[in-house]
Image 1 (cartoon, rainbow, N blue to C red):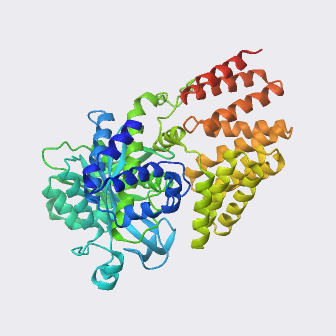
Image 2: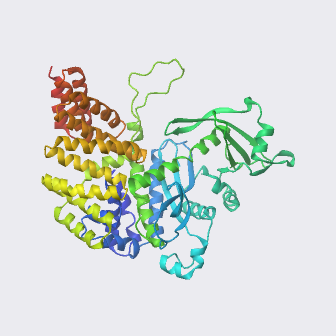
Image 3: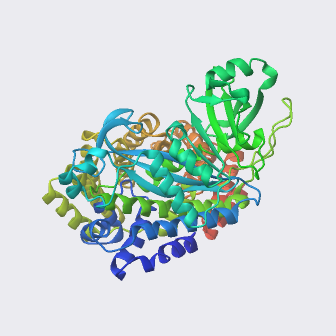
Length: 604
């Protein structure tokens, strides 16, 4: 992992006119990979040890460096690492999709009221088209992007001057932006078995024509009203073609399109030939509801064309959504507090670099860490004794990086950051200022002062409805109160944090937050003598930790769990918990602690 980070952060050196912005870019990428709950100029500056966010803002807004060249380096790095880790015959798919970021006001490049999936309705925001590289059996990463700018912003000279798009920028649809992304990828030597995309890209005739000129196979979603020319010159919509040609059940085959968040994505599939020998209609049918989804496919003459191959290509479009989820939740893809076109582009490419580093690490570790038992071959097959573990994910790789790179905050620096925030009179910055001061005070053992500071931060986060930040503050408050011996108060914070993590935030964040909240609650309950309740909390926390990468939080939870079990006379379960803690300590490089746990497990 460290080598991946060093290789990628050093490679763009020729793209920078001066060394200062190059070093700042490397710090920016490392901060994006850190455990910062929010990633903006202030928090990144605090993490990097800068006295103000000026260097970060200069990097994004004014520094002289080649953003397109840096994106090319990220692209070649990601593709090379994923290719090295993948099985030789694994499919290579380029998935096109767009994602949004909510924005307030009208001063940001590309901002417009529109339907925003991330907002759950119509809201103010910007939209960016991405190309993801997906290598079956290895992983995926974002490798190209272009921000979509509304035509009225390009034609309005005042808006163009204030938001900073290139002078020669012409309006382009999302399909036309996709062509630019693919051209960049082809120029860098990226070769794809298929290009995949949703209806936005399937409806773009220019994109389909471009791909066919390049002899590039594609599987693009299309609407039910899309018209096809079948054999004999018959023109039918997709729905009409299914009604006419696919009435019999025997014409459908049940196949999986790959793993999803809830297991195998199994559907009924069928395909219909068209008047063109290179074009096909691929149909997916939900096995319960009967809902249909249509894909227009092109496969050049020299390439193999089979139904399973087209199904696999269609299924490999979905990981781009996971790239967006990781990009936003783990690396701050949607947290750019900048307004200029080039600044947004630079933040995006630096996020892509952070994501590529962790994706490369996950791909390299995949074969070593994937110990899952083979799937059953019959319905009555007994469950395996050891179901094994899924391979390390991008999120878990990021956690492992943080375990070795976490910085101890400076009280002086945190106080200076708070003073800057108070002068700015911006509530979120003031809240984070109090949070960082509390973290520094906790490190220094000034627990009562830390409780006061983090409580101020928590109140401000709650008032602004920043639930994720509020959970972070509750967790720190619980830790401060617990160390101060105020166990009942600490328990209240952990329980509130647990409830919020379960009900209010995204599932990927809840998966990281809830086990820590339960572990904290278990510690407090055990210290209050409520051992039965503590065992319940520890049991649930231990189960949730098993789904994450090994960490210090997990081993502390297991050790305290083992102690409580031993106090209750449940020696067998206590021994199991100690042995599991020893395994976790070994993974994170704490051999002495692992030996101590084994010694405790050996005590009758």
